[in-house]
Length: 332
Image 1: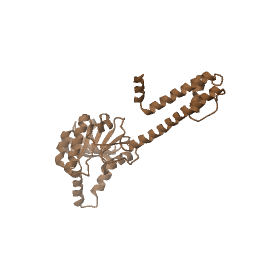
Image 2: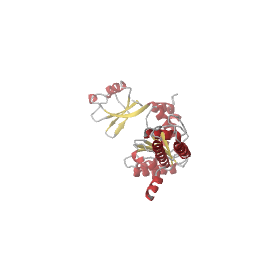
Image 3: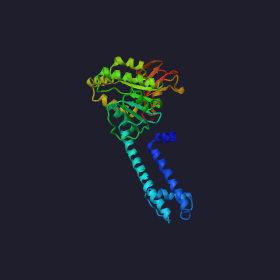
Image 4: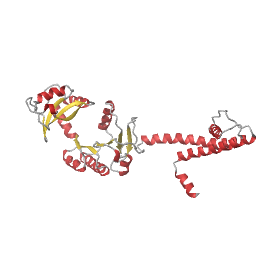
């Protein structure tokens, strides 16, 4: 008996209350059916009356007529009515509590094949906005240690508050079921500290899920090799990219603005690597240009083995095994 009581109190409160309500209403339904079989011809009629009475709805389709039946109804109202009210209040409070915990990043993520993004900053915000604008159906788990709550109401973003090097946080994010992770640099730290943090997070993620594809952002070029050694599949050097943009902006000789041009280009198109089709093998690259233009793609380079060239000659012959680097529509 003691073990049954212990087991009962180990069940979540919501299920305990629901089970108690069902048992109690069934009990009173059996009693009223036994006392007044004429007014309550079936057991289900008795249980129906018990639920309606206990919930204080009172449809009046079944009512006790005898004194004993009315006493049973009084006991039901005094016990079952309060229990049902308590159950509904508990259910409402649990729902509100769950919503608050969800906003504060305290709820475990149960999905799979999702994208994990580490660090909330302007780059992360723009990335999520871009994915929403493009209509990409992607479940995102955002891990951040600085936010107290996720203020944006996005159904496809699940926020988890904590440090991505903490094993418990990775379990909350269900990282072992994720398909990809993006680790962003922390703008609040010095460059060296930020890169070290990215490397530590990469090691933690790879240790938890060795097959996970990781895109890591570093701020200094000398830490790129360490990020790759830590397990990052792709390393983005944001400072190098921005320095190149500054250089082109400083020394441009025409009114074209490199930053705006590149931003518009990358938000509408994507790099794509495609092997040379069989019908174009042995043909000059000029024919490949026409072939891909019909598919709304532009060839910008060619890859022969490990060598990549962006200097395209119209008479260049395409060989079997060559790869063409093209710009294709983002949602092709």
